Image (spheres, one colour):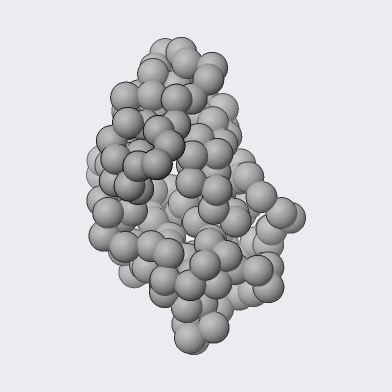
Length: 163
């Protein structure tokens, strides 16, 4: 297990993801508790990229319920299909929202949030068990690089906790 991150400075976002991937593997190695691993996961992403908010919502019945996060106080429950998180869950697809004000039904937990990426967390069976929600205070802050790395990181988390 690693207890300190080495975050490359003056590097592209892709280079940061590449450098952090083995560190995430080490962080998850040997730990099977989903809460512990999700908490460290959010801390890593928040610390490395300085996003406004990084957190998990867990599927509980027909709602998403707040899990481990880094950032200001958040919405506690989100109905399936509502907002970006509920929509990503319903569609079982990653959603990248360049401007949250343009997303129909956006749930504004924080006025500082300008753009967002939400990724479903799936077991190998395809069942969605939660979503990873990341908000940025910058418009159009997320792209395919974020999607690709974060999807692969979620696979590492699922492997550690559920497989």
